[in-house]
Length: 314
Image (cartoon, rainbow, N blue to C red; front, top):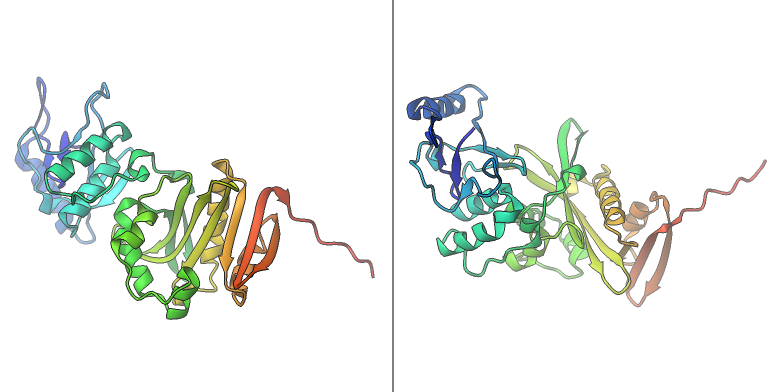
């Protein structure tokens, strides 16, 4: 466990008031030894605050000596999550470290990160950095001999979400965005990462090593305040289609929306998109479908249960 970490991932572990906390050389040797071991990984634990909760242990700049350089830091864990800093640039490191901080200190850390040049001045503090990450929505499944983790999106997922959309088939891009997009800029992705986990929620399906996994599926809802229904949209990489990726994501979106006081879900798609109809059909709610010009609209309200199938004797 470390005493203090800055926004780049550097660590100070050598002292606490009136107490010699750890030896400098022993800690660094241990970290490098774990990283050099076969299949070894270094993991650093840090409480997000001091014991009295009045100060953050994740700080803009260290007040003590640098004991573990940022180049030796891989996994970092606090009570608010875990991140993998290996290979990350300064902006990605700062964003990741802020997500590990106590929510009461995140806004101040975000402002300091911009002042220090770790984040661009155009960066905005999304609600996802102010709120506590809903870990209860996480789930890991084995699909086709591969481990797939379903979880809410985080601010550090921006680049992976971009890569997912760039790798989509052209037809799937049109189905998701209703246009033939070929570029996905930061502004296009920002709303999926800078979320509030209540009115705007994105669920990812991720495979691969923690911190470097590939996004193979995305589902998101965004609240339409007038109707209290949340618009849902999905995309799944071609090799992973027909494997219930979107169905699992939809179930989690519906669960979260209901718990957050949202009345139901609505989806807008092409009339020829039979996959969306099949996706909504198993939900235990009454599904209504109708055409509006060139759109097919599906709605389900959580207060309207699906009718059981009629029994026909004979």
